[in-house]
Length: 260
Image 1 (cartoon, rainbow, N blue to C red):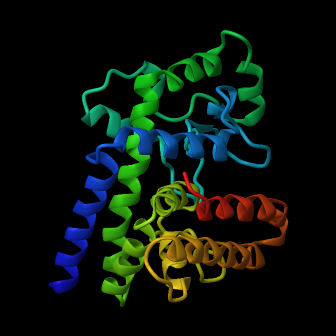
Image 2 (cartoon, rainbow, N blue to C red):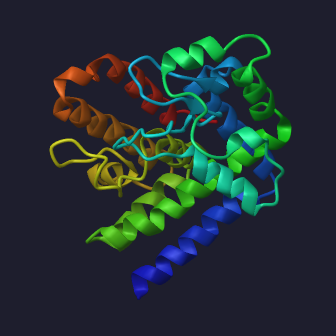
């Protein structure tokens, strides 16, 4: 019961810090721009893409995964939950948002990706101020909701909340927590693991070594994330060739150490 109360207090504090502080809009804007830079190099074109070697396109500043019909992957699909988040907030969405991804293969997507084609129209909507605001709020809410699920799965729920809180005490730490969930997930999905260990937020919090709240905890979070991602690559199927991404992943984690 005590751990549950702590988690509720923590979630309320973090919601207030991100959404109700006097500089909330500025902080959220900086976090959104960093995530957009991380995922899409800050470009409008990057808002709709299909990476080589993947079976699905990625949309938005958070590269939300969207499965075509018949595709099932171990990675959590995130674009339909974003659409549902917008719908609950009363937003009017384009018709293309609903259902599975409109292309079955990357080749089909590339043929459609011409000036004025559907991918171009998607980018126009995703880069609009209203859509950018909804994407930012969705990513923030996703991180805040992750903590409760992590606590429920952990044998040390109070410790998980305390570590999350210690990282969140620094503005760049709050960015780290928000970005990492969007980047590599919560770590609560049993299908998102290789040879046992996962690589989400839960695993990073468990990997952290003792550190003081604020900047020291944000730095330790970044280092713990790099250790978790190294372990993911070490355990990944050789055919996936995940080692080619590791340097970029670690560089992204190093941004967690720097001020907004």
